[in-house]
Length: 255
Ligand SMILES: [Zn+2]
Image 1 (cartoon, rainbow, N blue to C red):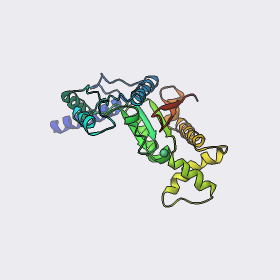
Image 2: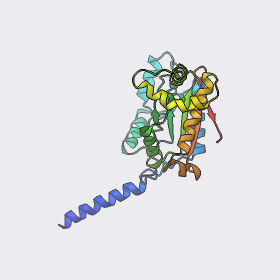
Image 3: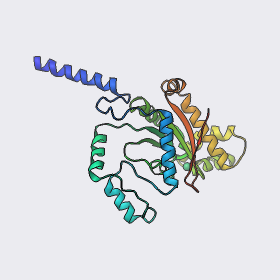
Image 4: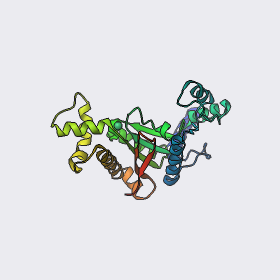
C-alpha cells in the first residue's frame, strides 16, 4: 500500500512537473533558454544570408549527411562546411530525443522551392514548421502554432509567402472567373478569398504580400493564446517574402 501511494505521488509530481516546466523552461536543459523574438529574427536573417551566399552550415545535422550532400549533390559540391563531428551530431540527436526547443515557428507554403530549414540554413530541432499551400491558417495549423508557443517556448512566428505562389495565383484566377477549383483545392481558394476581395486589383506579388499580411493579422488577433502574448510583447508575429530568383527572404516588418 505504501509503495502504491509512493508511486502515485511520483506520477502526480511528474505530471505537475511536466505542466509547470512545459513552457520552454526545461530544468534539464538550462543551456537552451527561451530565445527572444528579436534574437530569433536575427538568427533567421543570418541563416538566410548564409544560404544566399552559398555558404550553408547545415547546423545540427549529421556529418555523414553533410558529407553525402557534399559529394552527391552538384548544387552543394564544395560549399559544405563540415563543422560538426559525428559524435557531436549523435549528442545533438540524443538531446533532441529528450526534448525540443525550436527557436522560431514558421508558417510557410508547401511549395517545394521554399523549404524553411534550407532557406534559413537551420537544422534538427531549430524550427517548428507548419506548411500548407498558400501559407493559410486553419484550426489545425493554429493549434500547432499555439503548441509551439505555449508548450515548446518559441517566441517568434514567421508567416512566409513567396514569389510565384501557385495557391494565391489559383485563388485569384478562380475567383476572377467566378469558378470553383477541383476537389479540396477549393478550400484553399476559400481561405484566400477574403484577401482577394479586399485587395485592390494588382499583380500576383501584391496579392501574395497581402495574403501574408492577412495571416499575420489573423495570428496577432487570435484568442485566447496568441493575442495576449503578442500584446504583451512576449511573442512577435512577422511576415516574410521569399524571392525564388535570389533566395532572399525579405521581412515585412512593422504592425
Ligand atoms: Zn506557394
